[in-house]
Image (spheres, helix red, strand yellow):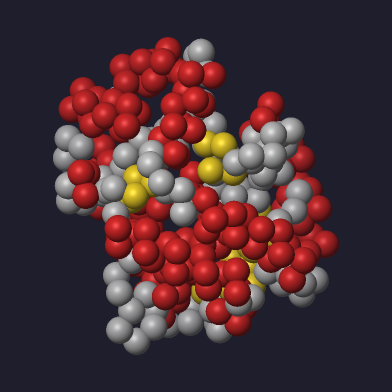
Length: 285
């Protein structure tokens, strides 16, 4: 029997880990489940994290986006993934825009990122505090990532020559009234802070923090792809306020566990703990 995973998305359009990117990344992994499917691990990692990606990543990204804008998700993934038609249409608008923006020449995403950095007066102090809180051996690689925005999961960073359009969007905080796409990753969100360092350290321990986490992520991605190949998992994407999530789920569907990610940044913890509890079978969140 398949596990059923419902992704509870944040209520803010501009958050990077929104459904638009989750669905894209999952479609990448579904491609790897087919006969002769290529290993997409490092492409997935770079598209998720890196300002610049390789030519091969870029080609795979455009192909995946083209599939997503022309074919409904349940058809594209043979019912492994699903989203309602009206919500798919909302996400499709973003994927179409990324395809259009991908035709731009030059370091256009890097320029948008630079503008976002200049607008954030507290970024440098936040990074300095963070760097002093992590083990010394990781500071150089972490600082390099903060400076460049490039996440070289493997190989030579110089080979990452294409701009990553999926780091752009609209509607984040005070920029919500601007129609043009901007660099949509909040400057106060550091990519290393949410990682379970103890778990990662069991997988490997090297000086480079991006490399260390890439190894850990690779193991997770391989496990997910393995489950998808065995038809052990089903994804349901829901674009909605988490407080109204029950209206989008089958009444008969129950969960043995629910992960809420960082939703308590947007909802009171007491509300968050009681709302999803109606969906589970007596197991604490």
